[in-house]
Amino acid sequence: MDKIKQTAGLALGAIRRHRKEAITLFSLFLFVVAMGLTCAFNVTKNIQINVDSKEKSAIGAVQTKTVSAALMTPIEEILQNEGVNITDDYTVDTDLSKLAKDVDVVNVTKNVKGTVIADGKSVDFDSTAKTVGDLLDELKLNVDENDEVTPAKNDVLTTDVSQISVARIEVKTEAREDQIPFGVEETVNDQLGTDVQNITTPGVNGLENVVDQVTYRDGQEVARNTLAKVTLKAPVNQVVEVGTKLPGGGNLSTGNRTEDPGSNMDLISAVVAQEGGHTYEGALAVISCMMNRADVGSWGGGDVISVIKAPGQFAAYLDGDYSKYMGAALPEVRQAVTDCMVGGKRSHNYLSFRSYQTSGSVQIAGGNWYFNEK
Image 1 (cartoon, rainbow, N blue to C red):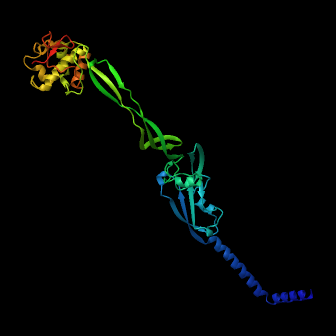
Image 2 (image 1 turned 45 degrees about the vertical axis):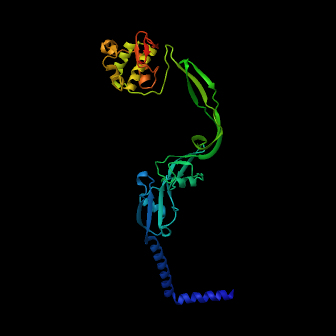
Image 3 (image 1 turned 120 degrees about the horizontal axis):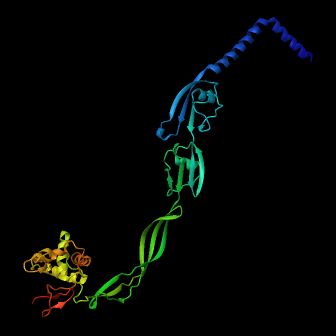
């Protein structure tokens, strides 16, 4: 205790002896502290501020400015002074309470808000993610490479994106058994009427194994492509016996030469109606005769109009009696002309006819008797 008192006394004595020097040193100390504080509050530095509005029209056009701020100024105050929006609708990547001396760059980004629809559920988002894919990663929503994302994963996430949909796409290979439909074959029997059809061999469907690639979208099938087929049982075609004998005589044939009546349809139908009557069978018999003559080519020409207009042939045309049927409906006659000329259907192979019976002639339909000259 005595030593402490002795030491204090010595120090106090030294201060009294050097009072002026002590005051000077203390004043200098205060000056240095004051200067340090002044520098801290008045020395400035440059800070870069980047503002991303996330607008579609401004993709890749982040607004950047460099500002000068005192070292001890809070980041929040700097942003406010620069008019930068720092509401809840924006995200700042720097702690607003930090001082300028500790920060070089500040990024301010507008939040994008919306909904993601996937797997039958809706998830709201409020994010500054760069792309749609980044947002999905942020939400921990797994997306397969086959899945459909709208907008696309690589699209920039902007404020106009309010809804993102994810469709689950699944591609499977599936095998199935399927029937092979049987075909139908026709055989001609000229002893049976045209209204008779007999099934001589019943048709039997075949069976095949089919491998498909099936695409499902959210569990619903949207596409199916066949990859392979293997026949397990071949089909058996059905055979049908078809009669060609017409009620009034003659035999129906198909696959004959055809020609387009075109603008002459009205004239041809009128002549046929005058020569063979208004029934389908009578008209088919007359037009068949005309087409048979056109095939031969020695009855005035190689087409029906030439045959009709040939000298000394069809009285209906030569006498002009056909004119009363020009423009008439004549539905059965016109159908017969169409079937014969366009469809290749004929009811006989005769080249001539008369309205009365002669030796060797056959009455087919329409009151006419058909024959071939010897």
